[in-house]
Length: 254
Image 1 (cartoon, helix red, strand yellow):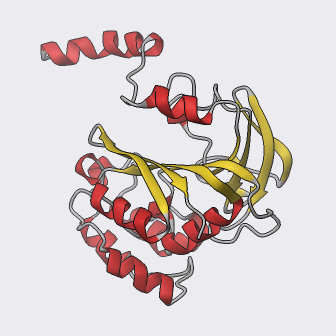
Image 2 (image 1 turned 30 degrees about the vertical axis):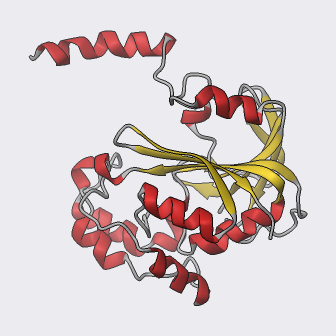
């Protein structure tokens, strides 16, 4: 066993008390401190007390959106006043990310989305809907997979032109455009599901029910293009390890 491998159990214990942090986490926590927000997907371990962006401990209130009453990540969910994470409590909404019906305009001071927009067939449509429910000068915090260290590393980064075409065509969540690319290039050895190829194919072809597939692949340049096209002023845009990309922006209403 290598010396590095011998150190891993010690580092795991150390990181329970001294977790690695995103360089700008204090600025982000300070900006969101005491505010009311909404998270699309989640809750997210990265935002918890020992995460690399421990936001939950700083905010006042948090509502949540998930696409179904049962997800692979969260199990069974009930629409209503029953969402609890760390020291916050709020509403659980069962909604499509791109259709937050029943949520009023300008309801929130921030929106969180972690490892979420890659699962959306039409991310620009979703972001336009998110802008509707976030107040002018409210915050968006996106954490997006960094292809360098994930199972998407063989796939090309999506183009902004493609995302724009999806938006203009009003693509919905039944879209199967990227299924073959995923089946050809997805690195199962890096997939935490542990599925074999046959099971992975079955899951991919049933994506409308499970939403596990990554429709698109992002890098910092694409995130910047998305922000500019949707009137989001970028404050922070950086990598965090080979797994995460982080963007903090301000909602500039049109």
